[in-house]
Image (spheres, rainbow, N blue to C red):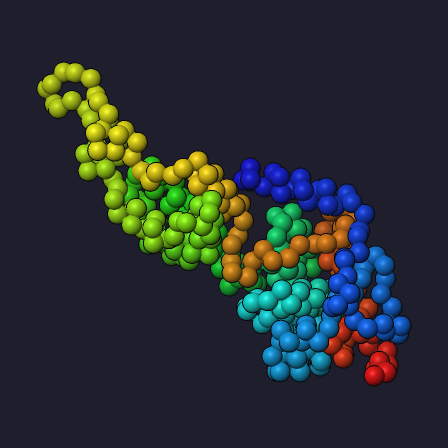
Length: 327
Ligand SMILES: [Zn+2]
């Protein structure tokens, strides 16, 4: 395991030890009082308003309204489609709401356990914390032992993204070492440029270094005189001491000030420690999972999703048999 996970896991353990806190509710976004919809203090329902729906298109909204807990796969399918375009916090939150419900409504019924496992894997792929990802993958494996294999496309995408993130980190190291040929190879590797572009703001302390800048820098190296070794050895047959390369001053590679170097090292730690799909790392469990037992029954609580509210009606998750709110 990468040592960069250390602080993340410590943080996670701290969170796990804390009692569940209700999420702060923005009074502007809070739904108008709806006494017929009980919201447990320990697991507040989603804060919803018309603004939520604005994040979905007409066809998505129509499908959302048709979802019923008897068909958990329909929650999963809509959730996975929203997951493909996580372009607003509302869509990300709705995705989480849908996946948690797919898992919850499927987990106790043998014919739907596969759906529940897929939902756990999708939640894992969205999770910010390594601890959450491992926990959700374990849950998927309990629900459906072969689940880690039946999502090969997603798993492959994840591995590929992690490989690109690792290579992007290597690229920065190579550039600072003046290994221009190797750096150019890394930059040309699949997905690396995209990773760097996504994190362009983090390539320097003040956002002043662009990917183009790095590419230009990579072309300057290795040092023409010392081949980026930093020293000029005496010619064959000649005696004498090696001397510092006069061209690069004995310090081949991209020059950075201390603040920019620190920014790059921070970015590299993140790249090495996290999967960085565009749709990855968007959610975290918000409650306190009661112990870290990979028990499928704990997922809804951990994500603070009130799964009793199973039906989307009038822009909010509602009880299936509750009457429509009086206008
Ligand atoms: Zn040199």
